[in-house]
Length: 438
Image 1 (cartoon, one colour):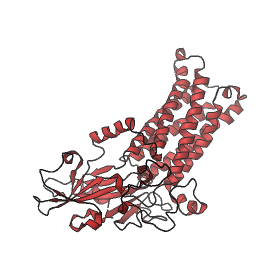
Image 2 (cartoon, one colour):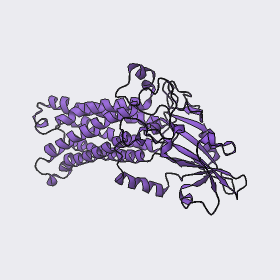
Image 3 (cartoon, rainbow, N blue to C red):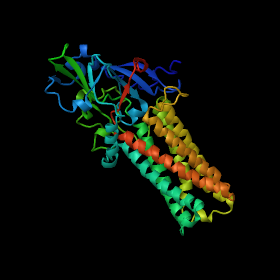
Image 4 (cartoon, one colour):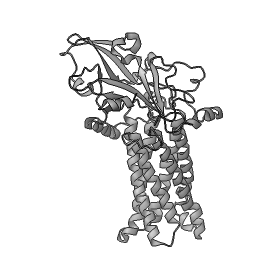
């Protein structure tokens, strides 16, 4: 089946970059912008490479002078493609698709090893515990969601453990412990994090960003003498997270001139916006799956925040008769949780080539999937909570909060991992798989 949409309705990435040529675009819905696109880079053709094409330095290399990191970071590749995805672009990521050479096949490229390699995974895991780029809004969103999820896990213990093991209950556990953690989780995790998620969506890098440096190596002992090394390079990225001194979207002054987006007249008049104009909403953002998902998330968080407020001790234990408790506490959970279900579903669809085909090979899909499970748990908790006098329903309501909180924590930590992995390298093994990328 052919992709349902082949062109961008508005703001095609790299439209003003002569080095990159759009080969194919695709996405799950024809009435929305594509969510992924495949580009050829003029600097990634060894036989045609010139200093003007790749705007990088040439290096003379022989077998004895190659640095030790080549064995780990510069892995031979027979072909590579630059892949643009809307989610990755929004998060400041630059995916590279690599095909490794078969035995005896010539390798015209050197690239970093795949990011699913155990050593690369461990490196990012350590980074999530030791590196705190508060100037990066994508990291900040993930960080807030992760700690908010920790609070919700605590809430799950407070409201469910006394039901399954009454001997463990202490005074004020459900009303005080459960109510306060619900308030903190709803406001910090859902509301504040969702607001930042909205800002991230409306300030995504619409111009496109390559983010890789291409060096031509000259090996005197090799026939042909030319080989290209593709390396992650922060100076070739103009996403806002490169600027540690400015949270509001200006690219780093250290970005090399050839990597900076060319002026397109009206597109670059703002480097940050708190809210887009109605014209931009109608002509661009309403065609973006990521923006629509962020709006659903913010709507759900705002409604869910009502139940977070009414969960506070002194409020929830005075909501009588039962219809008041349902209206002020349980129903907002159902409506807010439904918003989260819609949001996570849209985020899953954004990562998929076709609306009906899951994408379990992509980290972004797993993030949305686990958030979808968490949203189901929170929605189910609100629905079962209205059966106030049914002990079985109350047990299942507390249990739904418990497993839903853990699902949110898994999704949030994966999002934190994603935000720190800015240059993912994806490896395909067969010609058929690589052809599908073209």
